[in-house]
Length: 412
Image (tube, rainbow, N blue to C red; front, side, top):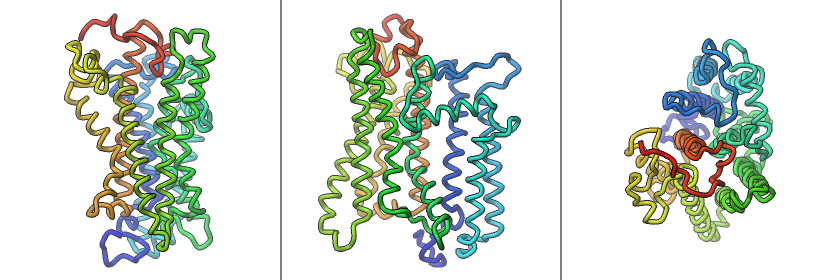
């Protein structure tokens, strides 16, 4: 509850204004805007994102750049959802009974958004080729598949990593559908995150991490079968990356057990709670280390000789393309903080805040924002790897290349 005495016990004031289906749509549309901004900024920085993800470039200057096409799609999706939301407000008037009765409006909006991705309008949305590429990649990635390097492996990795940040959003999408299809249920009622049983939602949340786990294992198998494994290493980094994604499963499982404990079982909750805290701590710190040291190739966690090298700023690297030094340090701090939002539950004064629908939405938004910022530096790192050594991006994904990546570079 948001502390509003005028609201029915089953609906908080935030949900009266911004029901769960519209929040899901908002976060999904935000991903499209975010990708357009990624493409636009990196294009300004002369980082060729399409070449990294093996997406065909524009054949002539008359064609709009990739980021402009993405903005066009994001604008059309945004206008569609905004019109739907305004009409919903006009009919519901924040009355709890009307909000529940008119749940078909936000659900129709979700259906329209889905159809626009599957059958887009060419002039208002993405091109036929772009839509086909997106759907093909989603199909491949959705089962944990990963393309060969020449076919866009890095794009598959980026997309699958983004999906891990949308795990809770996908779970809420399922909750919307479950509540809408359940007899006497409503998608705009107070969210029942146990809809369909206490197991389905945690399983859905675990799917994105499972996808990345399988991709890492496939990569490990490819390295082991490679005729050049003496030069590329034995693939241990792929196993370490797989282990990182596996740390998400105890967090999801223990969190689900804690939520479903009855009052009579509270006596056993202390042990589960401590195990959950330990699992969250491991997942957060391991993921933070991987972001900084592996995904961004920064030296913050390297040995003192490399970390303090006069060739580059403390804890960073020689070549920095995105921005000034302060931005890198700020992003490192932000990444750590946003990976540890679960710590709010450790505070007796703040733990209840995470039960508000508005707080849940804000945590989801912050995770999507963290991933959006992460993409800038992940792509920058891959671009530097592919241009610094004379090797193609196919050869250096996931740091398989051994040696000093920057030994042939000039200082900038």
